[in-house]
Length: 222
Image 1: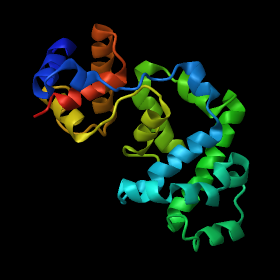
Image 2 (image 1 turned 90 degrees about the horizontal axis):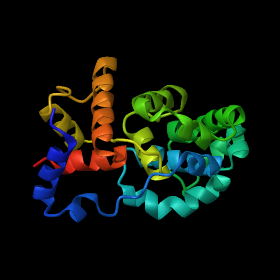
Image 3 (image 1 turned 60 degrees about the horizontal axis):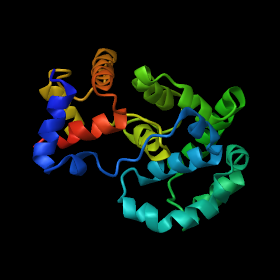
């Protein structure tokens, strides 16, 4: 496995400059900043990813104002207690993506967020307090306890909300394979542990965020 600086230079050579590789990367939010985010914002972010699955992102962008209105601003209490009548109304509401499993997932995630928030003080507090060296554990927790938050949906949501983390995109996986960390996309416990260890090592070497490291790995692939 190469040192992080060597991979960074590969990315810089491909993209032409450090700015092209590392520019415009948002600084991850602190634990307290994540804790201060409204629970409704987390539910809205999860909803974006859930609704987008299988569709062009622009479809969600175009419909988003209507989706927010239809779900009453993703008010946690209201969504968690979604009545059968409201559910049926949403299935015929042209403002939203009329998929019963996706709409039900919004309600189930509201229940999930509400329960975590009651225990931790806020959903963002739970997310922010999760140990950085166990980021895969956080993603697995979201997948196991949330609704339709597996694959890259949970990871994209964490990125959008400002939680520092990595993404298992095609190019990131390709770099990890090239470095001998894994031999394919990580799905087993052992493979995930190997990826986590590699990111932990590169972070110790560089002092950079997982978000930056993930970007560098992706940009180092031809």
